[in-house]
Structure formats: structure tokens, C-alpha cells
Image 1: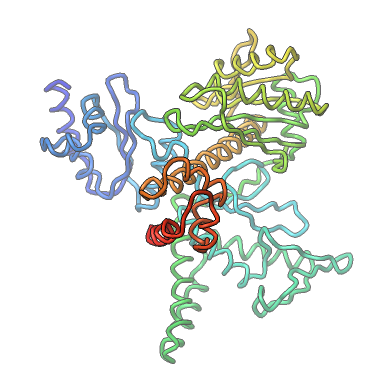
Image 2: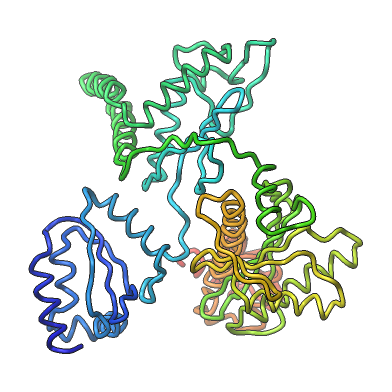
Length: 490
């Protein structure tokens, strides 16, 4: 970093506002290095250029990044919640080298409503897929959102995702099995027309018209407080906080009502965009997940008729090697999947999607060559620009962001990504738990393996009686007593 650059940066910092916001650090090629959020933009950005050696030596990653900074940009926001959302969006967009925590995180929750349903219900989702749906959000506070939906259900008498209404006659529905547990002062038997009036009121509530409900809750809270019924007052206070947090939106809610895109239409668009010979009713998508080569796993998700078929999801531990090689991992898992289908005489999918670029696609094709089997139609979806890549000489394809075919492919990819990451996290958690035994001096590697084989998990070991531990191979009474005491304290 030259003295001229340092002077220019200091001058830019002096002009920064003392407001919350998000900043983006750039290198000399205008490439994003890092995206961060701040309560106070001026103080936070200035901290990167302090002369304190302790600050830089304590965080070598920051030191390395700071040496590459040539410029920065910033975005002022109104709240910390808004900063968190914008930071997440920019990290997912730019994928900067020095950001790690938010690159693979799940999206914030949305509330989804399908107006075409006979009895529209409110569902939680992380993806905007269908154009005719209404979407509310995103909401940064998942816990508060769930509490708010429960309040909304009781207040307006609407259905959430887990409801199972029953039809009484041609026009009347029975909403809930146990009305006392679900609704308050509202009829449980209702016509479709009246129910839709409830839905519209609930939509206005989600759009921010919460004042009357909050005022009513405050009145009840104060009444309970005066009666010294502090438990009920506290519960109402929590409801008020939940509604207020949910209402702290970073942008206006959207009612996405332009057009009506069904699953079949999404599949038809995908067929046309990829020049497929038939509708891709059965699609399978693969993704790899690892932490610097450790805990390398893979996922396969299956979509039937444009919808997730979760019973057919599969997950794999990579067995053929140890380390970081996405290409070999893709080759292995694709080979295992279709060797299994071939052996069982089951049909191959109409379309295979690989999370990755040309290298991953060629690795998948190599697996089919090893199997001496002609592959189904196969593509890759490269994350950087959501580019569709092909295994042959065809040029890559970039579809508009709102294209239903791309939306469907993104949905597939995100499902595979989440499924693989969850498996990876599960294995890491299990390994961390198992490593507790490493600190117990009375158990060597052989005994440790035998104990885990006998009891399955550390949780089962903790819950075991001393007699049950003694029955484990090579565990005497004294060792069992010490082990039980050790596990109770750790």
C-alpha cells in the first residue's frame, strides 16, 4: 500500500458518516475483498487503518487484507437489522475472499402465501420461487417471526403450514380440530369467502399494520401487572417484543402477483431453455461439502414434477480419498449413485444438475464412462454468475434472474447445498462429542472405539448406568465409576 493510497483512504474515512451501515473493501482491480457491517461506519472503517501493531498481529487475516485495500464504498442504513440483511446479500453477491461466515449461510426467512389455494395458508420459506405467490420479508429474527405467526393465527383465525382443515359441504370448512387451542372468539366453521377476508386482514398485519394489536396487548399486560399476575404480563410482553421485532423490516414487503407460474410451467421453460427432448419430471442434483478437505461429504436431492421429493434424498461420505478434491468427490458420488440404480434396475433421471462449473461436470461424465453407461442430460450450475455449463462444446448459458427455469435450478442447488452442509455439520458435531473421551485417561483408542460401537453416541454413554458401562468390553468397575463421573462433568 503506497503512501498516496493511505492518504486517499484517510481522506475518504474523514467523510464517512457516524451512522450504521455496510462497507465493501476493494483491491486495486476494484474486486471486493471484504464486506462488513457497522453500528458506526466512520469508527469501524477507521479501525482497519490504526497503527496499533497488537491489532494487526492478533488478526493476521485482517493484516493481509488491509495491505491490499485500495478503496472502499459504503451504504448507510436505518438499523442494525437492515445492516445485517444488506451485509448478507452483498456477501452472497460478491463472495469476497476474506468473508467466510455468511457465504454459505441460509437465507433469512420469508412468509409465503399462495392466493390460488382454496384456503390460502401462511408458510415459511427461504426462496422466492413462484411469481403468483405473495412473499413477506425477509425477516432477520426467526424466533420472533414464528411467535408472531402464532399470534396472527389466533388473532385472525388463519391457517399456517401445519393445519389440516376438513370440508363440511360445498362451501363450508372446519379449520381446526381443537378450536379452543387454536382460535380466540372466532368461528371455526367458515366459508371460503369469509376465510379470504381473514387472510387479507392478516396480510395487512404482516405489512406493518400492527398498532391496534400492540395497543390491545399492552392494555392486557398492564391489567395483569396491576393484579400482580406477573407471569401472564411477562408472556404478553414477549408477544409485543416479537411483533415489534418482526415489524422492523428493511424494505417494503412485496406482493409478488405478476403472472402464475406452476411447477409444470417451470419444467416446460426448463425444457425449452435446455432444448430437452422431453419434460424433465425427474431431476437429481449433487453437491459436495467439506471443511478444508476434512469431513468431505456429498448430497443428492431429487425433484419430482418440479417439487422436492425428500424421501429420495441421499447423502454420502466420500470414501475413495482424504483431502480437498471436488472433482474426485463428484466422480465418486455420481458413480456410486448410478451404479446402484443400474444394479437395482431403477430408471435414471431425466436431468442431472451438478453444483459447480465445467470441471465438476467433466468429473460426472467421467463417472458414467467408467460405468460404460450413457449419461442422462447433464449440466452444471456455476455459482459465480449462476451460469449453466454443458459437458460438450455448447457455449455456457446465462438466464435472466426471474426466469422460471433458473429459479427451479437454483431451488435444486440450494436444497442440495443445505442437505450436504447439514450432513457435514452433523459429522463434525459427532466428532467433537467423541473427542471428549480423548481427555479421559482411563480409555485408550481401542476401548474408546469399543465403547462408541457398543453405545453409539456420547449421549448414550452419559445416560448409561455403571452396571451397563461395566458390561462394555474391557471396562472394570473402577474405570466405569470414574468414566461416569467424568462424563457427568463434561
